[in-house]
Image (cartoon, rainbow, N blue to C red):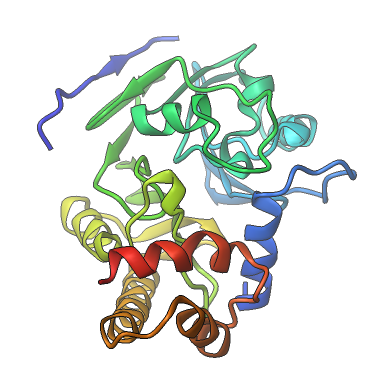
Length: 293
């Protein structure tokens, strides 16, 4: 990557469960949101789970750094869970990507915090690439193309773009003091989780494994907060990476043998439980036919 670094220094589920999470991520919800829970990872680092992507909460004596903010409708619950562990204000939010279950909360949080994302994640919201996303989604005001760092209350958090995977703007977030990474949706920790390849958002199945390899090589970490699912570790990420590679190999063999899109869709339904009307089928299969030729 050749883009200039930008540094901000500041004072101040099993397969069925995984699919349910993903489906919720791409459907504008009008019903009351499910109950959120907060889990302690370290004394100053928590994880908020439920109703969309996992949120990381990093506590400093000058305020909070969050990773992702779920849906707009989750704001009150997120703040209630945060207030159960700290009175510090939310100062910064690092967005892993543009999907509504990870960045939908920007609508509320932009009133109280600075939101930071990759430039491509910003553009994904501006261009309204995600079908069924609410029209009032708010993009980050600060963007980066390669990597950036936040320094708050004597603590450091790094965000970096390693390449295409789930979208063309996936940011990984690193907490060096805890040797922990938030992966966004490039990794889901359910044992049988498979990748949702957002081709309309610039995703790449072929590049996905290389992106994960680059993360595991570049940063010294053990724990991983995945985009969906329980707290995991580097070994869990490696196992997921290997499953993605097997999926790519099988699908590419079908495509290169001359099978039709209908054949590939049926294979993914049978082999990986991708339901016929799912977003896995609608978003991923057509793009796989093109990319895997």
